[in-house]
Structure formats: C-alpha cells, structure tokens
Length: 183
Image (tube, rainbow, N blue to C red):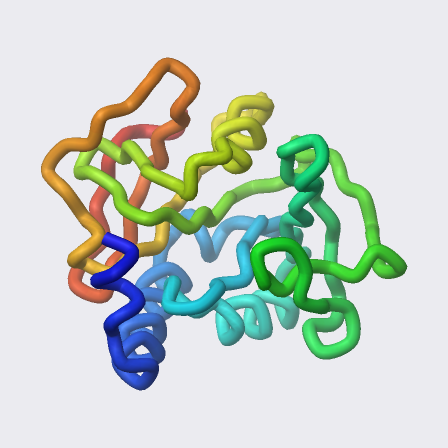
C-alpha cells in the first residue's frame, strides 16, 4: 500500500488532496467545529497545508507533536503556519517546542487522522506504533474522527484488534464514506 501511494506523481497527490480537502471543508461536522485537530501530511499522504492554513483563519487549530520516547502524541494549538512549525520526528511538520501551547483534548470538536489504509467500517491501519489509537482512546466527548485517504487506500475489510479506534468518516477524492455514528 505504501509503495502504491509513494509511486503517485506529486502533481496527482496535490490534485487529489485538493479534492479531499474540499469535501472535508464542505462537511457539516467540519463547518460546525470550532476547534479542530489536523495533521501535517508527510511524503505522499493526503497533503493538508491548504486545510491548515484555511482553518487557521476561522477556527482554533490543534496539531500533534510526536513524543517518540513515550510513543504518544502530544497536542498543541498553533496560530501561525509559517512561524510555528518545523520538521520533526518522521520528517513531519510539527509545532516547535518553543511554540508549544498545551490544550485539553476535550476542547476539540473534530479530529482528522492519516492512515496507510482504511476499510468501509472505519478501521484504520497506521504505521504500527499506535500513536493515534492511544490519542483517540482518551477522547471523552462524542466527536467525529475523520480519516483522509486516496481511494486506492480503501479496502473491503481490515483486521483490527481491541486497541484500534475506528474513524466515523473517511474522505477520499471520490467520496465520503460514513462508517459509524459519533454520538
């Protein structure tokens, strides 16, 4: 799956990413959210720079910081894309430590997550470290978790284990898949 994703020409990744981001921004759940947790797309993942920049104009934006030592994601509010981010663990843009603004996860209204692949039930295969599953498992409020993926990353069924946290929606360049209710 990673090979397929990485073989895509960069221009195609950008075009598909734009379609996916447009669908997300048109989604009622996104429009009504005041505080959103997004991610910075790496390599040939769905690219989210335009989403983050647009969200910063109208919402509070939270980004994850990878704590490799503890194998968890910490979360920080950002206010300026150009000044507050730097390449960090796994070559991902993350908030700089000196710009760290700790937030309580329970203020977040919507969480957008990456994945290697997803199935139609919302099950997600990540990179194998469980960072997002650990984070999503501590969310107490019934908020939507949304996976962004290219259509070829969708499978009929993925094997999942008890610690895997499924998403409520998956958005691809072709469609929005509602996997389960979030309430």
